[in-house]
Length: 349
Image (tube, rainbow, N blue to C red; front, side, top):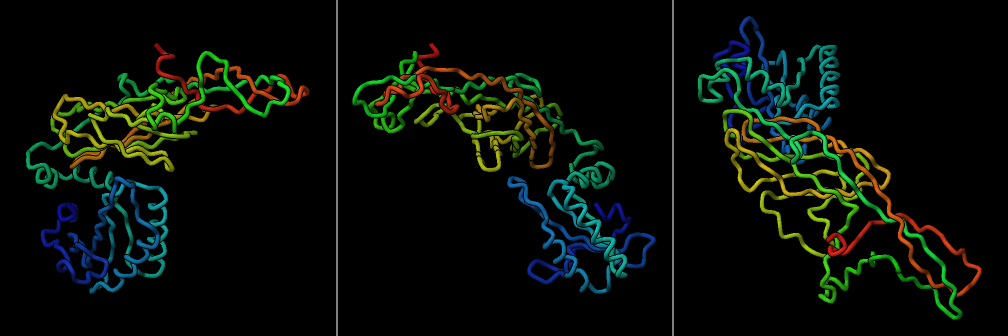
């Protein structure tokens, strides 16, 4: 591609694998120039959104100072997505090098490279192995309702403790609500409790990918970043059980960073075909009303990104439960802390 941009048929790779390359993978003299330009290529693992570090950039610039003869410009070309912080750092290093009479430093991230491919016909036709000039890969990502907006409900419990004086009683509590919301995981896992319990504090969404282009999308995956006050992300809202329903995709959950990776079982999506993810269950904080989902589609030779929005309707149910107290002067009623709303499945029937 840079051979076409520079009009330099003599552009070539520097040395061979295993040899010291002095920070330069590809080099050439652009038409009209008398000094070499160099390119340092950096492949990055996009599943974990890996970017350049400042230390890496400094190290590669130092190596390139030893390239012989001296460079006029050094380009970083990377599969990593654009990042404002990295671009700012490279611009500052470029100004610093120019002031020190050294080579210029420039950065081209994957989105920049895709634009250059579309702008250079020879490279584009070679890359696609066809005579089509515009890339014919397009995709639309929405929720399962075909919209970029989903309305969801999350229910929490606010217990109202009623103190009941019983002479000689020890502090204890029991629920007299329409259901026993205190879920006993040990009891469930031992097989003593055959009832299935659901945590209604979780809401669920499904991600839909539709191939709107004419070419197949191959080896794709979808990465989601949730922005908002999220407490937990899960494959199920069942308590104490393992969901046996992940049939469309494999979910990689990163609770700490509020990220989800969706890996489909079918790696090729032909034109006009649709992929639906399995349900993704999300538990927000009880005072959260909106979550933004930033998505990225990565595939063999096509990338895209965008945003989805979730409006959350928070419902807080008050349930009275009796608390046995040994003293008659205890406060008759007192609210407890808000907690998850867990019910037996039969409660919903």
